[in-house]
Length: 245
Ligand code: C5P
Image 1 (tube, helix red, strand yellow):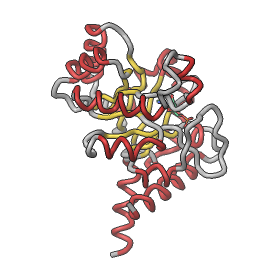
Image 2 (spheres, rainbow, N blue to C red):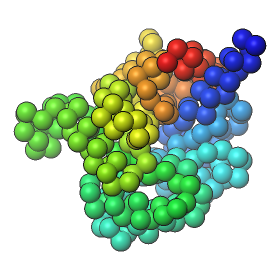
Image 3 (cartoon, rainbow, N blue to C red):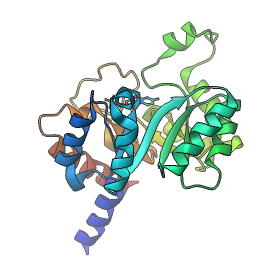
């Protein structure tokens, strides 16, 4: 019985791990997907791979039975965003990001229509801290968390499905949106790994315990000498956290 319960948590955790394919070419991305095999079911294709054949690769991933998150962070006039999001919905893409500006969020929701695509709002990049938002022109009285929460609540009102947020803001977002907004969390570093350019980092277990629905993990897996073993270790850590929350 204990094992069956464990397996349920492990499979639940596996579905919540999204590996960021931030690699220079689809040849390398494809080799990594092969190496990860059944350990990983969900992949993020971002701007770094887009011009290296990422769009076509996203279709291939769908054909291989994987879920796909297109992280193109759209920011354009409303008609263009609506069209672009509608094309992603036609491709059966699972998750897609847009910036947290009202007009963009509304047109993304219109483009998504009744499809299965989940539109995610980028609140504040996890590579940004107080100094960065001050430099963008926000007064010093505005904290990163305030901006994240403001954008999250706006996204919910508009009908967006979820937000991208660091693990540090997850519990507050869940609280203030009554758990109605899905939270996808990048900036994850297993204990002992270098934070690199990410400024608001958390471990996989802590992010899940804080209430994150999905974790996006790139370099901690893709640059490990044994990506499959590292992914499996992370899935186990997530499963333990799910069992405890
Ligand atoms: O390698 P690492 O785990 O830091 O990668 C995190 C991924 O999540 C990157 O692809 C990055 O673009 C993405 N991301 C992020 N912060 C956001 C939105 C997306 O780090 N707010």
